[in-house]
Image (cartoon, rainbow, N blue to C red):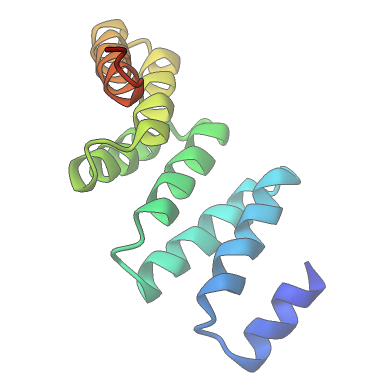
Length: 121
């Protein structure tokens, strides 16, 4: 973690360090720091949908379900085939008690899974 912070001291817009530091923090359970870091990354690169998914996941892990759902919905709108975003969105809906929305996301996941499987001749 020190290495990422040092890189950011030298270059505050280093996308790799901006992304990896909150990822490490999230894995260590420092969710508020992770959320702040992923938000910062989206400020630097608003089109980074992986950062958007990571932010949504951090919100979800921190039980900030409304923020998680909004962020993950934005991710799937920008990239409808992003399996990871649909999976996390389904989980967030379930945690929120929104069973129909969770089921709809699971159906999307099933369609995406079928589309990725090779077809036999």
